Amino acid sequence: MHARAAILAALLLAAPLLGDPAARAEPAVKAAVFPVELLDPGVVGGRKARPEEQRRLAMVTEELRKALQAGAGLEPVDTAPQAAEVAKQGPLYKCDCAPAIARTLGADLAVNGYVEKGSNQIFNLFVTVSDAATGKPVRAGQVVIRADTDDTWAHAMRWVVKNRLLAEPLPKRS
Image 1 (cartoon, one colour):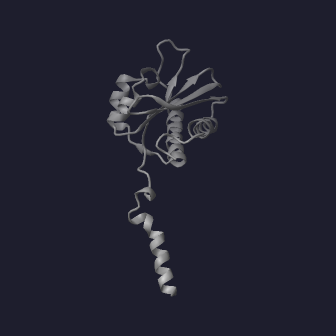
Image 2: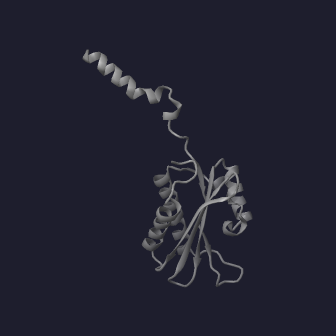
Image 3: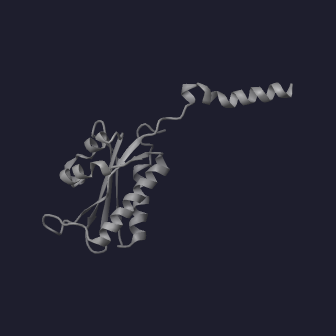
């Protein structure tokens, strides 16, 4: 009798894996997380980010990618194959072209952001998540960074992801 109960219990535990479509895991939602850009409104015509700013922008881009993957289970899509198109169309915060570029990469969502320099110690961080198929924004958030350090930039990105982008589940996620 105990062997029969053990087999029944094993079958019940395995049933979701064998064929119950409702119990299968959702397919991963793919997200093209584009590099975070710099906006310096104090410079007419803009400027390229300085080496220290480039390093911080890369750092917060990686922070964004990791936080979305860990917090929402998004599967990051490599955006490098479209780097030339991003450079041609960009900056992404001005062109509304991130969803179309993300779609060419096979992504479901486009994620782009920028840091707006207000002064040497005050920055605004903006992040937008858009549906790649429709181009419509599905989530956005912003936060003020009040010191120019690695820690404050990273903390700001983690905060905006947790409290703005993932405060509610993203589309196609429970």
